Amino acid sequence: MSTQRRDTIAGGFSDTSSDYEGAVRYNLEGAQRLALSIPPGAYDDVLDVGCGSGWATQAVIDRFHPARVTGVDPSEGMLEQFQAKLGGIAGIDITLVQAGVEDMPVPPESFDLVVCSMAYHWFQQRWEAAAAMARAMKPGGVIAILCSGKGGEQAYRDVIADVEPINYQWLGAFDGNLRDIGEMEGYLVHAGLQPLDIWMERRTRNVPVEEYMERMRVVAGHIIGDPSDPEVAGWLQRVEQKMRERSGPRGWRYDFNKLYAIARKPG
Image (cartoon, rainbow, N blue to C red; front, side, top):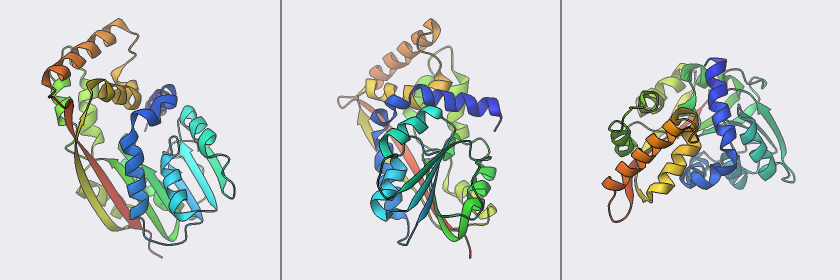
């Protein structure tokens, strides 16, 4: 990933970090499910890549009670949220590192468990991301990944494809970000890991339009644009209006696909 591109994504998440957990409550539930899918074992040293505000680490702590956790994220704002929430937990040594996945300064073969929850789809070099996480794992260590899956968000994509001027960057981001089971398997195998389980879950949700729009603002503000800009604000109003026209009595209906993967490093 270019430094400029990574800084843009990190800056966007820093700008919305204080609103993040309130807007992505389904991601918190997904992290809990990811933690429950990790094979039983002792995981004293945990690495959380793209750790965000720490909800995946919280899920791992709740289940496995590790001795040491290292959280890596390029967003300063997200790391501040993580520190405020989890930095004072007694009995757990927590280290936070501001860095991208490809160049994270962590020692090789040092972690029993690597977790990456709702970050992988933002990585621009996914082959290298998988390799970097594999290098950090001890032989016999486990990696657990949760990311957005291919085929989701089609109702919203149909709307933004029908609102002019078309935001081609945002429309194209779905094709670039969303991954499928075979693609994830390829990343893991190429990194020298042995997949244990890879699966997709499709959820159909009904939410108020304003709740959905807030979620998109928080997770993709760096792509959508600054809502204080009159052109961006006008575009968002047209998107919201079209969503309301297409909503039913239970609100805005959409599909969201979550892709889960569990793998082990041989050894």
